[in-house]
Length: 202
Image (cartoon, rainbow, N blue to C red; front, side, top):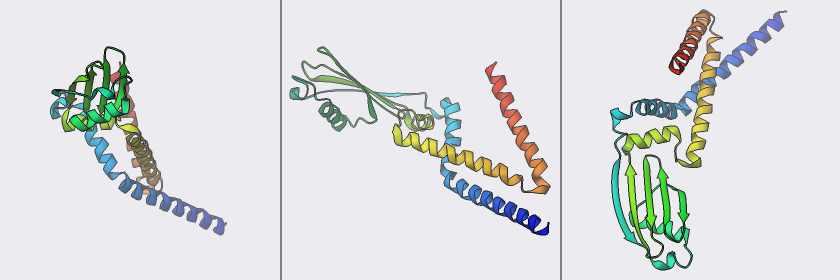
């Protein structure tokens, strides 16, 4: 009986130690990501406070070498030439071409560039829209036009934060004097969240 009790207590201590270790180091690993997504949650919720609703526009034009677009348009050459000449950024999300017009769209976090190209002459116009640092951060928060690497980072950060939260909840279960109060506070917070979600949806 005594050996069984000691073994049970030992398992609890080891499990509590594992939870504590995970909670500590996951909080350090996700520290920057947690601050980033918390802060950009505020900038996203109040875009007017940070000027991210005010776009800055720039118009420009130019001429492409005709051999890049005739007799058949070289998409890679055209895109890279435009990037080099006008410092366009983001990913190409649209490239439509016909005999009368070529449309190219560059998109990135807080950034948009529309290119209209005349394939018969090589002349083009560019309309760029930028939304400043706050617009950039807001789009990164949403994962909009940020690429696969950033999308993966969001997923990893979410997993780290979920595990961090669960290990924190698990730790309170090992603290006998604080267990009831801690679980009660967690339940109140959960109920409050569901109440606000319900209230916001009606």
